[in-house]
Image (tube, rainbow, N blue to C red; front, side, top):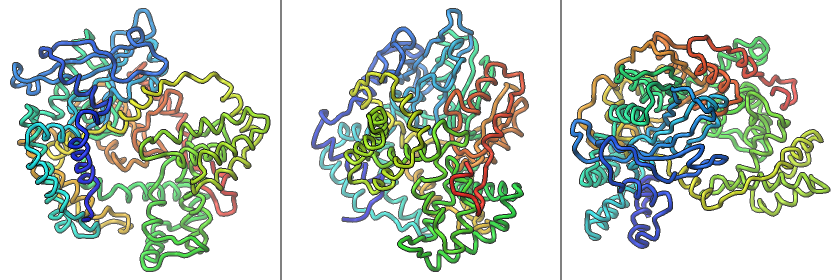
Length: 639
């Protein structure tokens, strides 16, 4: 059988499931999405609905509610076909809440805010302000433009013979070789991508869902219109990743909106260069790490000249993989470790380079196994060993069907701490649940290494009464998270709003000037971005999409130091464009960085929304700085 891309395999699979199983194979989430789309209402209307997903520790109808906001597909034709956009409102706890809610804009483009609705980020802000989670048009629960939807429409629009011919055409395409130069890879990739795009564009258009209307400009109208329809005169915006671009366009296109403050987490400004960022992403974060080491006197003394040494090591590994005992390390495997700067892994990477030069894989193996570098930069109430053990169990228990299976096994394992012999009880559960896992010996050893303080902390945590789990709701949420994307929405918006303002050859030329050439993204990555636009017409691009946003609205920019998706240059350039902003570069973190109310970033963000005119206290960031592991230190001492 020819080797085909993941996208095309999924497309073919979905076709055969639909053809063989009919409606019985439709999932709960997709059924809910279809039911929401079928509700009849006039443009501008609000209609209450049962929430697609229940929110833990909340009471529907009392502390939160859901509805649909009906909008025109095309605002230039307000009497034409409409869309139903789902939203969630979490009500403030105060009897007399402040009049300006927080509106959360999810990323992607393609993620639905409804899937992530909750108040865990906002802490005390929930006491005084409502929280609004609107699903962007084209996302789950708001007329999702995904592969399943295309298949469903095609099944109604064309004959079985036509569908079979189409699937045969797609499945006969080979996946291009990733090492091909840009032009060759683009030609091969575009052939099949164009077949899928053309059919699905036609399917959506025939159903009255003109893909060109699923754009950021219309989404700004949707958000501002919803807030107004809900009766709010003022509001705060919190955007994440693509959600920051949507927030910026709201600021640009709706000067009449009374926006009190804006938080932009992992900014994607309109001036961003998507293709150039793709070429430079890994290179940028590694150079940033090396600069941090050079600025640290002890690290620089222990590991000088990291750029030159990395170039030499990568050239050596490309010519001949390093064999140390039963460990073989290729240049690709080394690159994967070097460019993963999640959690506190950055602390160990200079040491890893020095050891590999000497033929020592100790730190390499420890990072690979999650024995070091797996704890949060701000620390944990558990020891490093215990924190790493949780991660190892969770990863070992994860399945393709249920990414949260490992989390449940963690809960099962640590329930054993309340047995008479906690270590033996936990080990017995691990041996039962993870009998076939390659990580079993490592996990068993980790249980033996737990400190008495860890055992006591775990006993305290596990003694709390467990919440009742509605398995059907848990499965529905798991499925919603798995489907929280929209393939054609993402590609269409990239093709209309970003790539027309970029030059592929300019991006490719950047590879010639890299300090560490082996860290460049392959040509195939760039070709895939461009190829995804093949035969998916979105109309003429709006030239304002690439112009800077000028605004004096108080804005907090949260930029991750090691972000590869919206890199550090984004935050810096955006800060130069806005006139009333605070740029905060967060050490030792990548993409999407406001993840809790109690973290340092959470404290800064909550303080900003509470008082946007006051400069936030950034002193808590000091604890997030790297603590580089030095050659004469035990591996666990640097965190």
